[in-house]
Amino acid sequence: MTLQQLKYVIAVVNYGSISEGAKRLFISQPSLSNAVKELENELGIEIFNRTSRGITLSAEGTEFLSYARQVVEQAELLEERYSSQKRVKQLCSISTQHYAFSVEAFVKMLSRLDNDSYEYTLRETRTAEIIDDVKNLRSEIGILYINDFNEKVILKLLRESGLAFHPLFNAMPHVFISSTHPLAHEEMVTLEMLENYPFVCFEQGQYNSFYFSEEICSTHSFKKQIHVSDRATLFNLLGGLNGYTISSGVLGEDINSGSIIAVPLKTDERMLVGWIENSRSKLSKAAAEYITTLKAVITDCGYNVINL
Image 1 (spheres, rainbow, N blue to C red):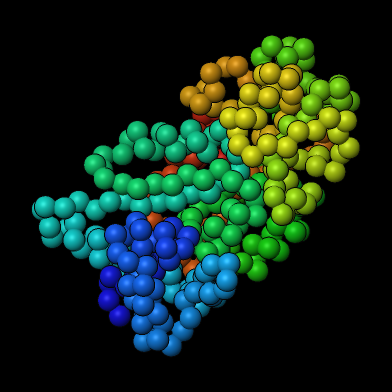
Image 2 (image 1 turned 30 degrees about the vertical axis):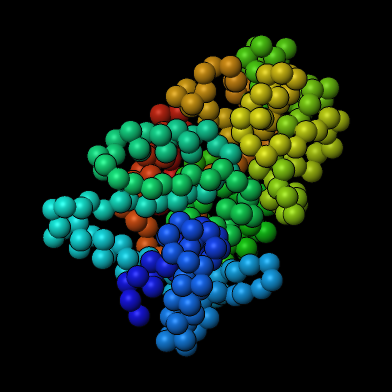
């Protein structure tokens, strides 16, 4: 087993396929495939499940990847410590539901970074994909919420995936609307007041279940409903169609120009926003710094961070 083989496996996972990994590594696809297969034969395990639709990490491969990442990270730290010619490129990947505060924390963390070389990934994506990313170590951290409605389903899935949930803050639900919306001056709104305006929500693909919805009140029957896949489109629809969405109420000024505002929603439902990690791996320095920055952003927005 060589360090290069470990890097090959990590590259295949990071880039999603043998072919894309080979392209990014500037080697031939057969060379990369053979190197991975030789490693599997040497260790007596199957790191990847191979099907006609591509490859995925096996259960043994998920555990192996955790150790491989740690070995490669330690090797890079050694190189940084004893080589004056090269600095280590920091690596970190984060998957999150579509939260502006997640992006704001990411921006603030990078603005303080003194490394001249890094490779970070921030994925705003679907709930099930966040869980899958952290389960398969494509991301170190996932950010999502639970509430009374989805708690049993989400926490059961996290346990089965070997993931731990860490609470960040309790959020009172708000609606995000345009600052020119007819209800923009209301101190609080109800779903009945919003009935004639389009409800804009994030589609969840094949996991389009109420339990995976990013918005609470997901079982409510909305008169007008629009599904979108990204936050920029959602914000445009809020302004262009007097639409609304339901979220945590944390809308950082650094990301939002003021065209979108948060108005409290009258409901008994609450949101517990938190972050998840794979219990088989240890957070990198960069990932830990992101969590620290995230807590600071949440505090600056007036919420009490839960410290356990």
